[in-house]
Image (tube, rainbow, N blue to C red):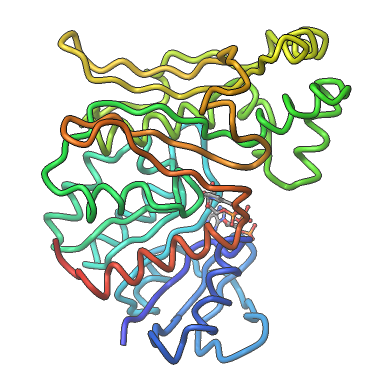
Length: 321
Ligand SMILES: NC(=O)c1ccc[n+]([C@@H]2O[C@H](COP(=O)([O-])OP(=O)(O)OC[C@H]3O[C@@H](n4cnc5c(N)ncnc54)[C@H](OP(=O)(O)O)[C@@H]3O)[C@@H](O)[C@H]2O)c1
């Protein structure tokens, strides 16, 4: 039986606990402890909501007491440096624990270093939910495209900007669009992190680190947000059959790796414009398989939680790779 420890107990982690309970007869993972800002809880967690006691003084103390095989890191994204998640992950590797996360920060800021540390510890570092809310991207390449090289990618990966643009097309103001996105619960704590393109830049850096060997950070992504588009302009474009999407692009070229996040004016029939709201799309450019990708229609937090569960199943199947 594989023992798990959670750091972070927000929407994704509580959804994951529900999946673990529903699927217990198929895969009996055992949750040994949950550590969050408000406190710490230790198992068993048979049913009902976990009861939190005083907070463990350090992450190390928590992990030592849990004695788990896998750290499930589900803390809030820190868009500036990926901490404290990176430190949590290192503490787990130091204890020879595998790590599964939905937090894109560690992949965007420290992927190469963390992969090397995981390898040295003989454990795995998995993060399927970090970019497309659990829809297969990293696993698709890992398992379905052996021997294929990804040379670039194009993605529409930030939901908040799509919701704002959709709202403006329907007559709302930029600010109304933000409020609508906030009501849907999809914005970052500071919505400007979405509207100025930082969320998309973090996803772009994460994809570039994993697929293109970029060893980069979000600061190196050429970035422009959607603030230059007023509601009036969006409606004029809509009347012409056009819309705007915040597009992430990454490309390996002879001169190096080029990464950008920019709003693009697209014809309504462009595949990148074909999804709106919280839906996401990524196209991978490859050397052998042309361009192919993944679309996720209106994913919710359940899909993100399930993506983390998929990583746990990956560990059951392939504890080393
Ligand atoms: N929600 C989604 O649909 C989605 C989709 C893709 C990726 N993600 C990523 O998945 C991760 C979790 O998302 P979420 O929606 O579950 O977040 P959330 O609801 O905001 O929960 C975050 C959790 O992290 C805990 N936390 C923050 N700093 C901590 C620290 N220093 N030590 C211990 N715990 C700490 C918080 O503790 P308290 O509860 O005590 O405040 C909270 O339990 C994030 O990185 C997010 O970007 C989420």
